[in-house]
Amino acid sequence: MIVRNEEDNIENCLKSAQGKVDEIIIVDTGSSDRTKEIALKYTNKVYDFQWRDDFSKARNYSISKASNDWVLVLDGDEVIESFNKEKIMEQIDANNDKIGKIKIINVFEDDKGEKKYIERISRLFNKTYYYYEGIIHEQLVPKGINKMCSWDVDLIIKHIGYTKEVIRKTNKLHRNISLLKKTLETNENDPYIYYQLGKSYYMKKNFFKASEYFEIALSFHLDFKLEYAEDLVETYGYSMVNSGQLNKALAIKKYEKYYSNSSDFNFFMGIASMNNTLFQEAINYFNKAVVDKQGSIEGVNSFLPNYNIGVIYECLGYTSKALDYYLRCGDYVQALKRIKHIS
Image (cartoon, rainbow, N blue to C red):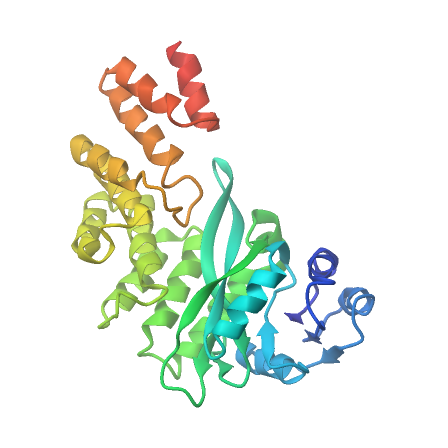
């Protein structure tokens, strides 16, 4: 772990890791609170590292301190929720030069309350084969092997770092934007940096600025199989919806050939169509989003599309059809409100 001023979070993180790993390595980049004091309750391997506006340097220093080859990277505002050690050890034995992607549940808030964004991130790896590159939003890159391969690890992490309160307290987004713009000075042809700038502005709710950076990222010749590409496309679409560029949002349809089986993509296309009063097309997309496989947003493959179909039918005066779809939403609060209203 690399940390700085995480006294409010680090104890919960370390409690969740204690007993599950062989050793805990903490690299502190300049805390002025009780972070180090708390960390020393759980490990004597606490190191200082002078911050150089470069996350990869700090990451690589931290993994150099690990006694073993296999490394699990956590952040101070994360908590291990599920950890199948026996299964993970079996996976490690079978995937020596591959990267393990852990499941991260990001908790965030919008105007309708707390939501969860679910993603797989490369965090478990053999340091013989991989190291970090990148000033911010650092990524693992291979050394001594020709390509990167991965597998999904039986490990679930809860991340609270982007709730409104944490962002307000740490000014994390302002820091991220500054570092990303600094990175552009030497990496102006890297679409990933423009993507991350767009994400940062999106979280600040500056949707016009976000859409500008997403548009730049999409102007490059992209491999749409890349880990971040689908999120780039969809968040670009949402930034246009949220900034009132409703007709322009429909242009995302051109990426359907890459993501036609994605519940996240089909749900967005339903939203874009709905906002352009293309109601039948919206219903078709929402129905396509209802699948067994979980999307990146909680409910995007189940109660959310059903709720929106219900809203469309209710607005069109088909009350019984609307009620049918609301009833498919389980205990989703917004749907329960509409059921009560109709009743």
